[in-house]
Length: 143
Image (cartoon, rainbow, N blue to C red):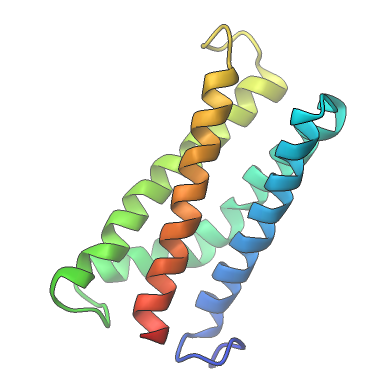
């Protein structure tokens, strides 16, 4: 079945893109609440966004990445490395997000002692990964 964004992407790719963008918007709202010192709102929002992101990662992105890594990709030449790099960065970022949420929300005794740099680093990596995901989608299905 074709996707719903008007490109040659399959439904799963469109769902992965849209769900990632929605969860990134939710996380941005969570960051804003954290900056306003509304931690009681910030923590559950960030935990929900990070953990819900596992659904499209496991159901859609990892199988697509394994296919691309195995050479089954529409991209050729140097562009064929874009999904590979995005998958590696995304995998690291998803694990970092999960660790950060676990450390901040449930197991506060985990390192680091002062976790603000961990939260900021995670946010930067998530932004890079979302940007990379948009780039992969555009290069694969639009250009």
